[in-house]
Length: 176
Image 1: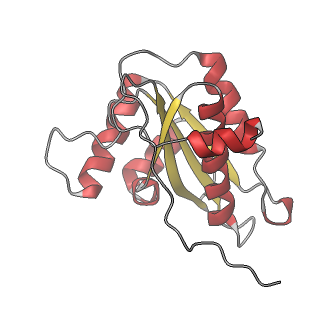
Image 2: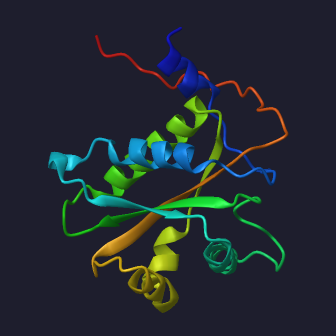
C-alpha cells in the first residue's frame, strides 16, 4: 500500500491529548496542507485561523462547551493546546461548506503524516455567529461579514495507541 493510502487508513480521532506542544513548523505545514484543498471553481473560500494562545484556546473551549451543553469542566478539545479553526467566506462560492470540510480533512491527514494527532470538533458555526466570536475575529483583524465557522482541527500528541477500527461492509457500490 502506498504512503498516502496508509496515512488515510491509519488516521484516527484523538480524544486524549497530552501536554507535549506541537512544534510551530509542523503546525505551519498542517495549516498549509489545508489551504491546498480542492475548492469549488477554485474559489478558495476557506481560511484557517491558527490558535496557540492559551487564553484564546481556553475561550474557544468554553464557548464550545457551552454551545454543546456539557457540564462545567468538560473539555470538548480533549486537552489539545493547538486549534486550527476553519472559517469560509459564504459569498465566494456556494460550495463554501464543502470546501471548508475538505480543508479540515486535508489538515487531519497532514497531521497524521507528520506524527501529530488530530480531531475535528464541530460548533465553530455557532461560535463565530455569536457576538463574542465576531469580536474575536475583529480583534484579530480578520474581516468578512460573510465568514462562517466550519469546524476546529484540534492538534496534539497522545500517550494512547490508536485503535484499529474495522470499516462497515457494504458501503461501496459499483455501477459497471
